[in-house]
Image (cartoon, rainbow, N blue to C red; front, top):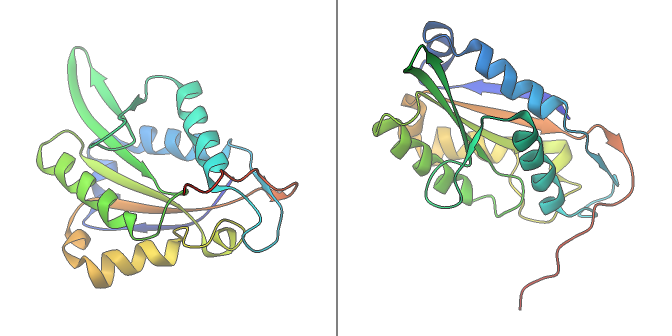
Length: 181
């Protein structure tokens, strides 16, 4: 995939550099950029869960990223120096649910930041172009920015980063999950 936009909040850019997280942040960017996603370029034509699964599989393949199933951030990794943990990054991937769940992701990041479990939080969402090809109500970059800057403004003070992803190009439609009744 391509990373089309990055928005830094709460001194996150400086904190990434100061805490020595640049290498880990670049690793995150590489994981996302090496995840190949082709979409049928037609409104609502693709299943978002397939995109999410591909991203999760890429984190697993990269190794040493911890996955939290419920209540925490989706992915986290630590930098160690000798036996001490020096710094940690937490990642929330939001590509397969309702856009308002971004607020829930921000709350997860806030909790992990306050508890000292992570030093930088990252929210990964489709960019505004890619979102058109995913199911209705899927989050997009402008949604995430709006939630942070207008509806949940305290989040602008936290060291978080919002990353926007775009698919690699046109392809066959990704299978949609059946609707729950």
